[in-house]
Length: 116
Figure 1 (cartoon, helix red, strand yellow):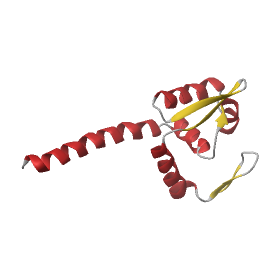
Figure 2 (cartoon, helix red, strand yellow):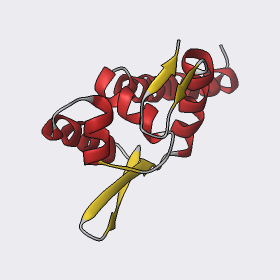
Figure 3 (cartoon, rainbow, N blue to C red):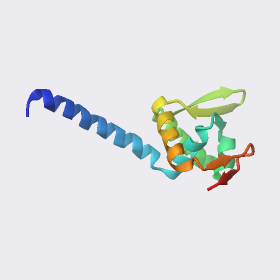
Figure 4 (cartoon, rainbow, N blue to C red):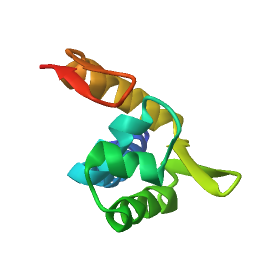
């Protein structure tokens, strides 16, 4: 094997390792559910708490992990923090997941899911 062919292979393997780490973040059901809702737009912890049926501490813990990893960001609007997807690669992934797994579901204005 020549050095010319091994360098791209090495780069590919490094990238695969990075992608695997990235995908592990998405493999948690709680984080994935949060990201599914954030795909629709910016939401507060309280809104996510209601949509997910989870405790505030659980939602905050998952959002904290997503923030530390650079996948979501928070902006303050008055006393409230609003969270949104910040990584454009994640938006592409979430769009693909939506198309493949959730396209038959409709979300009402009140956050109820219909279809399936």
